[in-house]
Image 1 (spheres, rainbow, N blue to C red):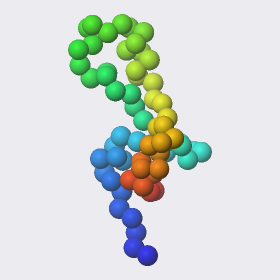
Image 2 (cartoon, rainbow, N blue to C red; image 1 turned 45 degrees about the horizontal axis):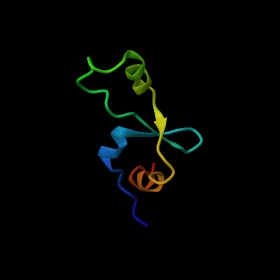
Image 3 (spheres, helix red, strand yellow; image 1 turned 135 degrees about the horizontal axis):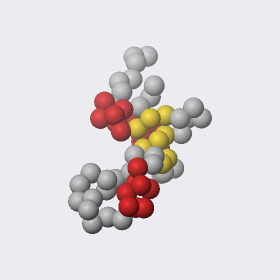
Image 4 (tube, rainbow, N blue to C red; image 1 turned 120 degrees about the vertical axis):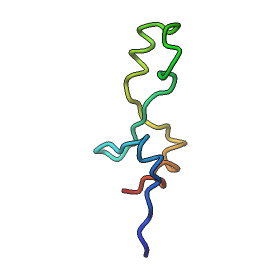
Length: 64
C-alpha cells in the first residue's frame, strides 16, 4: 500500500490530542474586535474539539 498524503491546509488548522481526538481553533477572532466583548474574545482564544460529525473527514486529511 502507498503512503497517504497529509492535507497541508488541514495540518495547519487541526492537531491530534494524545487520546486521538482532534483540536481546532475558534472562528471570529481575526478582525473587527473592538465591537466584541472582552469575555467573548477571551473565550474565542481557547481551543475546542472538532464535532463528531466532522471528525472522520478531518481524520482522513491528517492520517499521521
